[in-house]
Image (cartoon, rainbow, N blue to C red; front, side, top):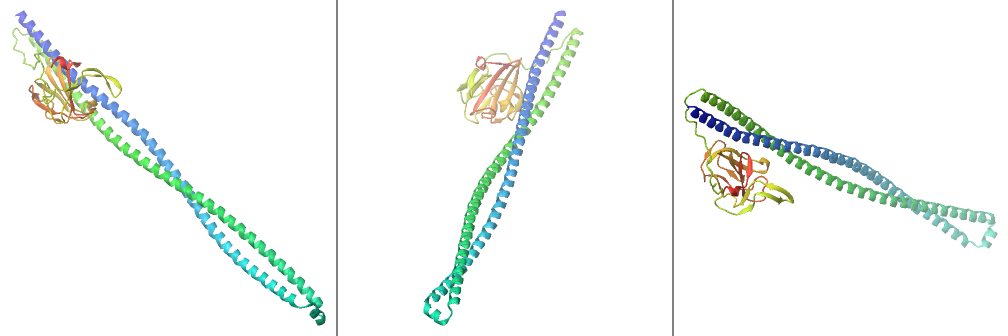
Length: 385
């Protein structure tokens, strides 16, 4: 009788240990994934905040460029007004110059006519004094007119020089305004690109937050199962120790050893072995084997068991993937799937199609990432296949 009781207690302890290991692995996994999702969300939020500052800076540059452009356009308008005034003044001076030249021409004609009168005629007419006086006046007037013409010409030249300077300055202002407008367009395009990048980051942030919430809920459920398993094991142990007879324990799913089934029937090509490898120039440890296959090919359960996770999304790089519990601490994982055909809690048989090959998550091409774990510790799958 004592041997029966002792045997029952040992069996119950074994059962409770199995449940605790199995559920602990699951809750630990969910906790790890939740923390990873939260870390990704935090990093993404930091990137969004940095982009916010960069966008604000670029928009301020655009605003400053607008002010500068408006300033140049105002100066250009003032220069155009000045050019119009100069052109008007030049036309007036040209008209005045024409009039002065006409006056001088008339005076020269008058002087020429006076010269045609002979000195004898002037003496005989008794107009000698008046003749000399008129000749001097005409010469003085002609000299005065000539000086006026010279002044007008100099003023006209000065106005034309000023006009050329204004034209040159206006061209410089227009070129600078053109350059600023081009720079402004570039800044606006940069702001638009940054805003689009920010939208993409915000979408990723929402995804990470949703993942964190999902894993937090799964973790709570797993912990609740752990506590229930502990309570059930304690109650069973107490009942067995106080009873002289024992009932047969509930049969649980166990893995009896032996070779696992090949998880990808359409391909036997291993593209990446278990162990350390160089990926993207970085040395890391590959926790499973990669089996290259055509996208959409069947993925099969390596052994009968219960699906404990069937998740879509990034999932820490696994992409869409499945975890199956085969009992005695043995679990298998099937990652990067394009589609999942089973759900958590579902029982599957060895060789049953559970998913399709894909390239989701951290993947460079269609393949199945297959893992074998014992009590949560990854093993070389080739030792079990």
